[in-house]
Length: 180
Image (cartoon, rainbow, N blue to C red; front, side):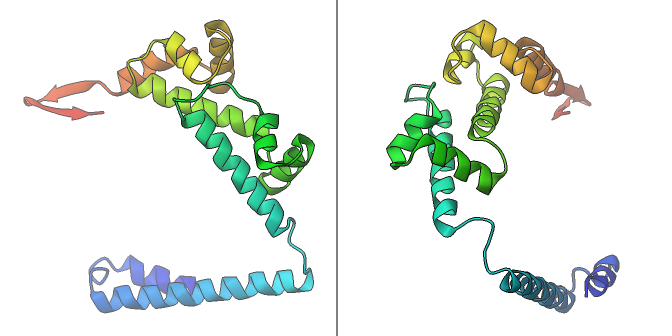
């Protein structure tokens, strides 16, 4: 089935033809139906998924709470996982086990990754100082933030910012600007 899709896609002159596009979509839907059947067959023999619906829901709630805390600049930027678990009415031990079971990573690593992504965005797009960025991601001080950022990216925050500025420089070519 995939070979049929590939053959249809390779012919550039026919790829804009509506009937060919429909045929590709039909083959793709048939393929997805086969994949779905194989998945159902696999799990029908082993009736239990690796986690329950309740565990999946709790993990989703934890992820949403973490993302909201990290990305919401109005709240106190530093928080801990056990506070989030208390808000959801679960113990931090249970929350940790369920989170790791569903997402395959610890909540602390997930929180660190979210903070790193936020720090990257702030360093790239905001005019905030490194001290302000450190505060906005909940670091105790600039020194700790700088060490943690270097651990995450391999660069200090100022080196990272310099690299981004170089990559974004506008160069002129025949009096028209373009981004590199």
